[in-house]
Length: 216
Image (cartoon, rainbow, N blue to C red; front, side):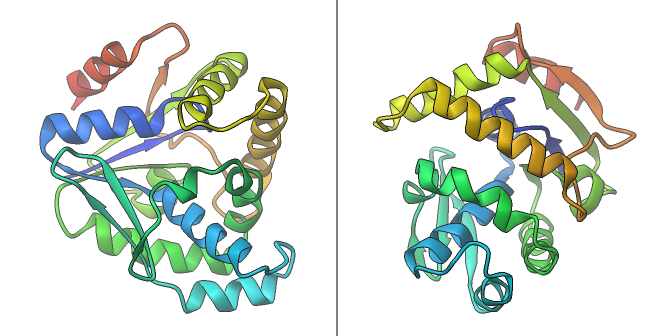
């Protein structure tokens, strides 16, 4: 069984997908983390984020895998190295949408995501899971939240990770990501026609999880 959860940054996709997967004893796959891992490699290799040909070359020769620990926590592996914490750095967040909009990069990731998702019962979250990666998913959800609430959530998340960042910077980054994700030519962020719309603005995590599970 495949469950797709899409939506903009800060809507709660990863948190909800992780909880739903744990409740159902499914594999949790954060597809956004895969793009973050590639972005990490690009930046650490000092490659210009605008050098599309070089980025495509790196993407073609990069191995990215996801796994769950016994407690359900996601592990991200970049060429065999665990980079689960590094991929959450603000420097990655500022660039990842530019990397993710490249057609050839998305094609590479598509194959990896389908390979992982079809390996077992899975819950995947991202921006194009229900529209492109798994259009035939058994259940699809589209999570949204008010922009200011999404900024607040992402700011709290980064603070908890020990990042020294201002809320206004988070707001700018999020607005930029929304624009890029929604307007890119390849697999833009949008709700699948058969996805269940869930506004999480005034809901806590438990309420959203309960709602999603009730539909499943």
